[in-house]
Structure formats: C-alpha cells, structure tokens
Image (cartoon, rainbow, N blue to C red):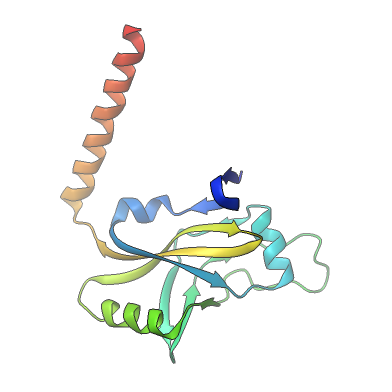
Length: 156
C-alpha cells in the first residue's frame, strides 16, 4: 500500500479528493503528535484523509476528522479514531497560515501523509474551492490525455 520514494520518504496516503475539489495554492510540511497505536496503524496504511481539515486554535494547529483506524494488537491502549491531533509547526508558520485562512475562500486541507526518516509527516495545503465548471474542465482534460495515450499505445 505504501510507496517508497527518494530521500527516505514512505508515502502512506494522499487525499485525491482534495486535488479534485480545490486549487492548491501553497503547501507546508508538519509533524504530528501521535500515540503508539496510532503510529502502528498509520504504518499499516489504515488511514483516511477524505474529510479531514486543519484549524488554528489558541495559537496551535490541529487536524480534525483524520481517521486512523484502531490498531488490532494494541490491547487496552486503543485510541479514538477521529480525535483531533496536534500538528507541529513553528509559531510564525501558524500565524502566516492563520492570516491567509481568514481571507475569504481559503482553507487548510491535509494532502498527503507519509513517513520521513521514521517520523510521521502531514503535507497541508492552503486551498481555494473549485467551481463546478473547473471540475468538469479537469475531467475533460484527463479524458483527452487518456485517449491520446491509448492511441499512442496502439500505434506502436
């Protein structure tokens, strides 16, 4: 399930729905505060970023609705699957993102969850919602590219 890429990065999951529904304007990498059973479950790939979002509360960044399934071998020390989890960012990064999200139409959405050198990292995107016609245009462009690749494959 997880893919190993260059630089010691092991990608666990990506939020494909976010790339479809939003224009990604900026990205930032954040560490996550996780319990032991959560780390084991993330390493097993039992994570869903679909409905997750980030917010700033009391000068701290939190990710909410990030679903990490309970680890089956954890015994009595289970975790809450959709609890809010603290993100590790510098104060100046949090303030910069808070200022941008206060502008109309911007929000913070998790885009990717991965391990970098053994530490769980979350890539957060500063995004703006797409209009319905933008989504249709993107789908049309992908269909055209797929057809073109199919025709090139047949010609060889």
